[in-house]
Amino acid sequence: MKDSAALATPLLRVRDLRKTFPGPDGPVPVLRGASLDLAPGRSLALTGESGSGKSTLLHVAAGLEPADSGSVRLDGAEILGLDEAARARLRREAIGIVFQQFNLIPSLDARANLGFAARLAGRPDPAWEHHLASRLGLLPHLSKYPEELSGGQQQRVAIARALAARPRLVLADEPTGNLDEGSAGAVLDLLLALVAETGAALLCVTHSERVAARMDARAHLRGGVVR
Image 1 (spheres, one colour):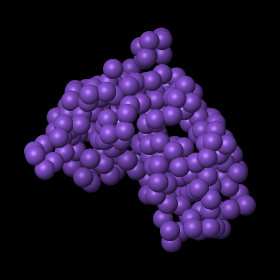
Image 2: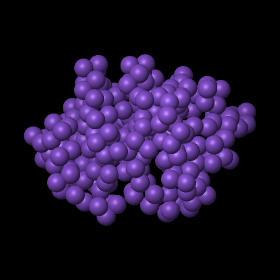
Image 3: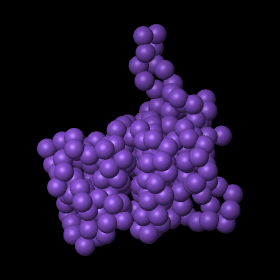
């Protein structure tokens, strides 16, 4: 990020992140010293070839996976040294995650899925949840279960769930990857508008040039480092 907003104190600061996975012939390095900054209220596309480590970096930043070494700071607080319970609490209170595969709870209807993260965080807000459902065109579908929803509708529920607790950081992993072009454009428009409305920062993993072009800035992951 090269504009003046990039000079703001980062909400998310990743430094020298290294991560390997076991392979048949020994450890396979995926992240080899990746670093990036994301300022409050800004959006950043993380691009790279398949297998370059984009999702791994996002999962480490979310506290879903450990790293071998490096630093991940959210609002100045290091998260890599936290135990599992503390990382889970951080996700509940400060991070919203939009997964490519939606990850909705099959036994809950759309209304309950939407409010799930906010209830876990102890911040249920029916008025805000209704606003999200309205903006995302979900009001006619709130009593439906995930299997009764289209892919685009499921992704809209997933976006609403990620934003329901008003997180400071939103992490999106290929948020339009399973959608057709028309649905993808509409979902992306709504995601960006709602993130801007909340003032959250957005880190979006994507292989799509069209999606990347809509973000404030981009970082390209190649060879395990951000170029």
